[in-house]
Length: 152
Image 1: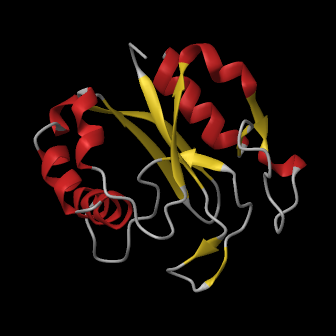
Image 2: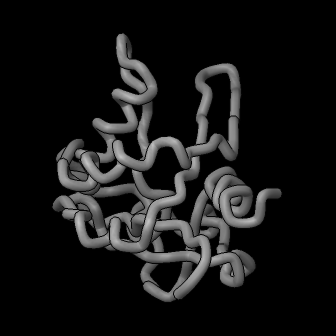
C-alpha cells in the first residue's frame, strides 16, 4: 500500500469507557476521534485522545510530526463544532500503536476505496455492521475522509 491513507478504527462491540454496548458496532471512524473537554486546549485534547486510543508511545511519535497537520473539515451546528485534521506520518508509525480494549480494529483506506464507503445509518444502532468487508461511516466522517485523501 503506497501513498496517502486514512487509518480508520472499526468500532468494537463494547465501549469500555462508558461500560455499555457500542453504538453501530463494526462501523468505522477516523482514528483519534473525540472532543475537547472544558479547560482543555486543542493540542492537549489531541494528545489525550491519541493516548486513549493508541497509547503513549504513539503520542511521542505524534509530537515529532505535528508540523505536517492540517485542518480538512469543520462542521458546525447549534450544539457543537466538529473539526477534522489530517497529519502525514511515516508508515513506521504503525509499529508504535497499542490498541485498547475498546479500540476494535484498524482498517486502512486509500483514495481508490472511497466510493465503497456506505452510510452507517442504513444499519441498526444496536446490531451495527456485521460484514467486516463493509466500510460504513456517518456521512460527515466520510466527507472529512474524502477531503483528507482527495483535497475536495
